[in-house]
Amino acid sequence: MDGMQGFIFQNYSEAGGRMYFTKENAMLIDAGISLVYEMYENKQLNDQQFYYCLCSVLEAADKVSNTTGFYSAYLKTFSKPALNKICFKGFELKDPVAENEVFQGDANDLLKEVRGDILYLDPPYTNMQYSNVYHLLNTIAKNEQPTIAGITGRPEGRNVSSWSHKKKVESEFRTLVESANFEYLIMSYSNESIMSSELIADVMSSCGRYEMKEMNHKKFNLGTNITDNKFITEHLHVLQKAG
Ligand SMILES: C[S@@+](CC[C@H](N)C(=O)[O-])C[C@H]1O[C@@H](n2cnc3c(N)ncnc32)[C@H](O)[C@@H]1O
Image 1 (cartoon, rainbow, N blue to C red):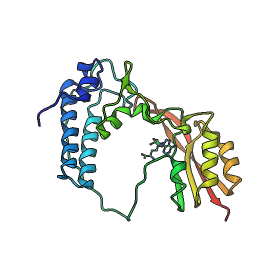
Image 2: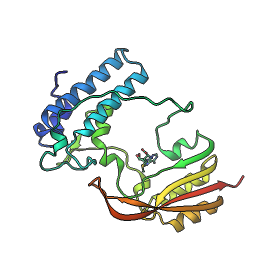
Image 3: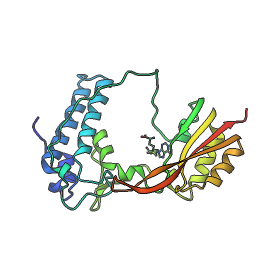
Image 4: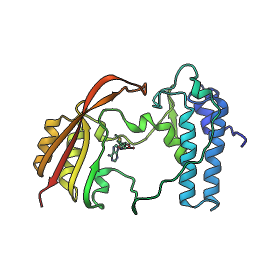
């Protein structure tokens, strides 16, 4: 496949003054993503094939990104993986274990229409905004050309989550627990997170029978993708809502 001097090349390679990708890889990402979208628009790919190909482009791009795994910044010199030529690969699809539906949206909005037996929650733990640290993968996945700013090229107007906001998270969490139409709510959260265990226990116990389990887990070192020998405590907060 020939490369293409598109949005990623112009903004997120050395050509645009930002070293997220080498110029060659950025051109192949531009070419790959526009081919996938073009084929989908021309009905040459069905939904499943489209998402499969999208996934292949994203995985390949992530493997050669000149970052620590987070796209809030790029490294000052190209790392060894970033210098490899991008390779779009197929991958095996596991047999589905059940029929499932996927929703995308704000959790508290979705809970107005979704109900069930067990609600498992894995919300952001910290004040890190996912839309900032993965902005470039979102741009590639959506084939967007957003207005971007600054040395890191972060797009304007992306979602910010109240779950990563110290002052807003409590009310967001309280609304979720009170409104969820589920018998069981199970939430994983660590002891180094923005809501305290006492607060979580207080909110959940006010809505039914509450229990908490904990285990030690190796700490993930933000920004380096390596773990040192420090441990954190992972909590599983379990609520059986009162009828
Ligand atoms: C700790 S990660 C969960 C990762 C997930 N368990 C996985 O394996 O991919 C938290 C996720 O919550 C999402 N998120 C943040 N605020 C949200 C909200 N208000 N509604 C729904 N999802 C939200 C983030 O974008 C992020 O993908």
